[in-house]
Amino acid sequence: QAILAQESEFQSQVLPLGAASWSSMADDDEPTFESAESGASHTYPQQAGEIRKGSHLMIKGHPCKCIEVSTSKTGKHGHAKAHIVALDIFTGKKYEDLCPTSHNLEVPFVKRTEYQLLTADGDSGEVSLLLESGETKDDLNLPTFVQVGEPTDDDKKVVDDIMKAEADGKTITVIVQSACGMEKIIQCKTSDA
Image 1 (cartoon, one colour):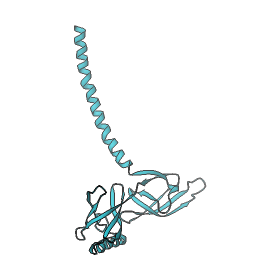
Image 2: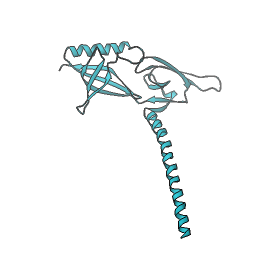
Image 3: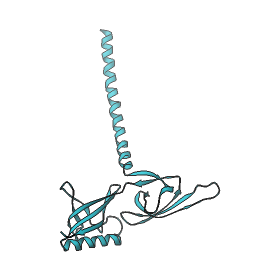
């Protein structure tokens, strides 16, 4: 009996300890997994030497489209370097990067989706789009309503086209570009209703 009592006492000491260390481990693991996952799923690695004009890449955390790339041989034992000039696909801001061609760069997954435009408010910038499921998508604004920087000439042209087509009562399809959790209307196509 004495042995049994000792054993059960031993178990009662072990269990809570085990449970405590397990739950704290799970708590530690989850947030790191979350953040790694959400960051990783937006981009994939590609060698700097493979970037071409028109390629997408991340520079300083911004999804960009390459407009110019040149490679230079540096010195006798140096690595060839790639000089990349690119424009932010959402703001049009110019970024430059210089890195060895053998280095991996982050490349964003860029998706283009077409939606039918239901309404566009030129004053508030709010846009309502029709999803294939029949539901509406109301979380986008006209491209001239930007949080950061100034709208580009392309943005203004797209908005003018949308507002004019809406005034004419045409059926409008917009193309939404998305990358890194951001979305923007980049183009519109019209057809007579």
